[in-house]
Image (cartoon, rainbow, N blue to C red):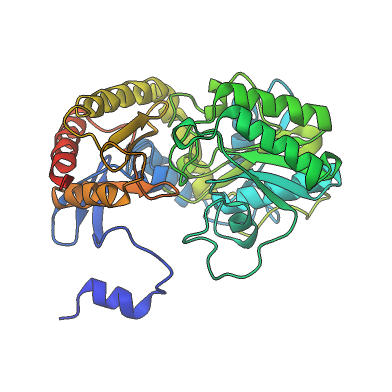
Length: 422
């Protein structure tokens, strides 16, 4: 009998990578069962999508109720009230003490693309500044903005023009805030006039890049520079959004607000939806028809998003993210004396990571990170790696994970890290 893996290899493009060979049969909160009945604890959450857990009852109830009404009209053809109501909620929730408007899309990459479109239209400028290690999607504009070549850019030909990359401040890898700001100053002096820059886009915590948090002082200085040159600041909150960092949005940690915020992943609780929210004058710049999409703001996904926001508030998930992250980081810290490969433990809220170097050196150790992932998977715990060097384990369990499952996962994680040492 042909295995699912063989069927996958025969039917699906090799470019669609897979972290595991687990084939899901069902899922509940922080647990996944495969086709063979094996139970796994999920510390990936669909890459920060099901922050409220797999199949949260309130999300399922909301989607079922919408199913009984209608599934699709295309908001641009026959609009519907819950789209408007969700926009109103995001306009109020996204950081920024000014009137805002929102537009909905389907994926994070779409949100980023449209944020750049809107910024260019509003400013009449073309240049976009992004950062090394950034991840903004796999579309042509998305991968042009992305600051990681493998596997996202390699072999796909010329990237889009007028995209400029700066080093992301990262003390662990020898880049200070002053270094990054000096690089921006050099960019403006040698490569592009700031009067041609439409926007600077930044992840408040880099996702695929390694879960490095941008220092508050750096974010604040970017805000000042953007104001000085009439450049828009775009916060890519696709992975950081919706309670993951202990705040609804990560920018709330920094005391400044972006002109445009992109979001996706955790908004839909497992259904595909993304959004762009920004200053009213910026969002109203494109003419009718310049924004949108056939599936953008799908009614089922919008219903799910309303339920997600209710769950985050009613279940206190921002505070729970902070508590879970503290417990995880404490457990990892307790291993440092026995595991010299651990070079850093970090992350706000429950957007945490552990980074591995070769013991007693500053050389990244991607082999160690991958062994930890494999050892954990063998013990039925799903983990993800990330980072430019592939030497980081990132932790993205649902914020609703029961304490018993969380404790079990921490025990498995410790076993996996110890077993991964060679």
